[in-house]
Length: 66
Image (tube, rainbow, N blue to C red; front, side, top):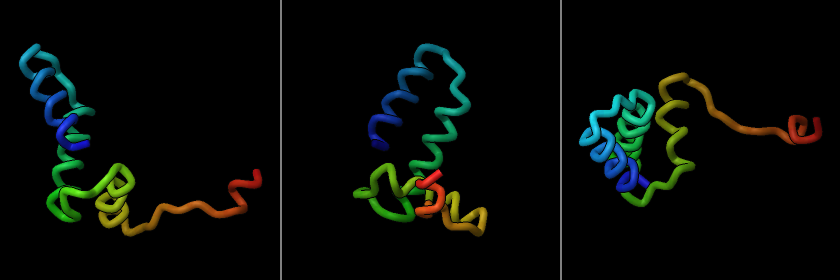
């Protein structure tokens, strides 16, 4: 995943596009790879956000029933 994000950002930069959200995603992936390893998948992206917010994101069966 991080490879694809890096390639996209390189191409967008080459085209002169401003991609603030994509750049934020790229920074997030760099943190995930650095902290959790290159084998991390998209489900790992929430971990640095959880840590920064001091919360754990999760669902409950009560929400699923609504």
